Picture 1 (cartoon, rainbow, N blue to C red):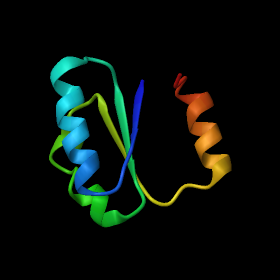
Picture 2 (cartoon, one colour):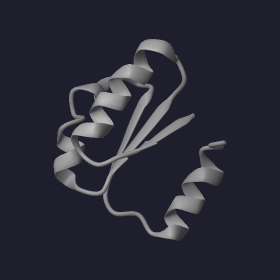
Picture 3 (cartoon, rainbow, N blue to C red):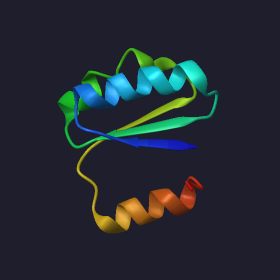
Picture 4 (cartoon, rainbow, N blue to C red):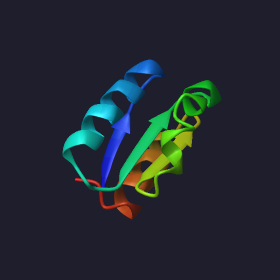
Length: 70
């Protein structure tokens, strides 16, 4: 799984480019609900997973471990 940690608009731009060249599952995290709303249309793709909240260090560590992110 690829994890894109971004702001608002930049996460969407990066996601669009990664989707062109990779077929992996992709998780995109934004710190706000607004950032998540900008990703609503692509979140319908089964390989795209969106997190729209500020994450603690513990949450980040758990995601890396649970999703097997290199």
